[in-house]
Length: 256
Image (cartoon, rainbow, N blue to C red; front, side, top):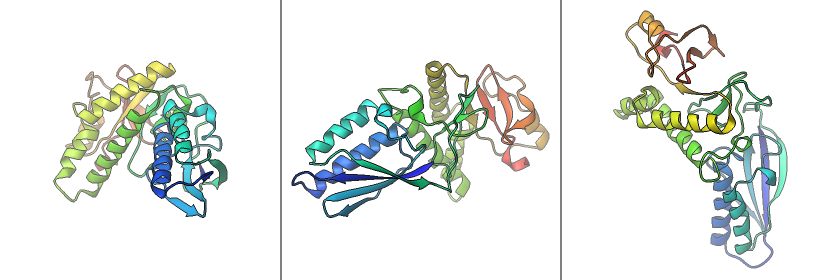
């Protein structure tokens, strides 16, 4: 992934409020299209130039060919705030982030954790993230629904990992149990992505707890009830894989 700087120049008198609204609106649209990653984008004012730094999946992530209708609308609103289209400078590769999947995968998986800021869509062949703007829009022209799902999943993951309040159990239910609202929404998004990309797309079920190692090793697929344990963990993470139900899961972290 790469760190980029967007420079917005004023071409006429304007206000800080108008500039703030226009730039933040554009950055939100870029985020919901997968062109920038993360949730916070500090804006620095340098005379008549406003600068924003962000992380992108690729050097070319901000190319206009990837723009969603929402991003194009955000670009048009810059003029109303007396701002020119941003000049983009690639500052370099982010050494703390993952590389991006380059190959067309044989299968893919919706997988994220609270420590990841990259795309939640991963190549099943390499587990590297796939930029969302590379796939057709999931709903209403961009990937806002998918990004929102990822944000909620990560929030639940962080709460259950901290384990310091009663909300831990509710958060764990959302990312672990197949009857939870978050699980169902994610699994439906998975199906939408598979339909659009024509690539088998799986959903990751987080697993912790359980009565014993044997019970966990023998647990069936939560959807069809069939055996789904694989001989060798896939990418060292997925000990279970159900092809008909498009699910993968880990052996309970309590027994690893």
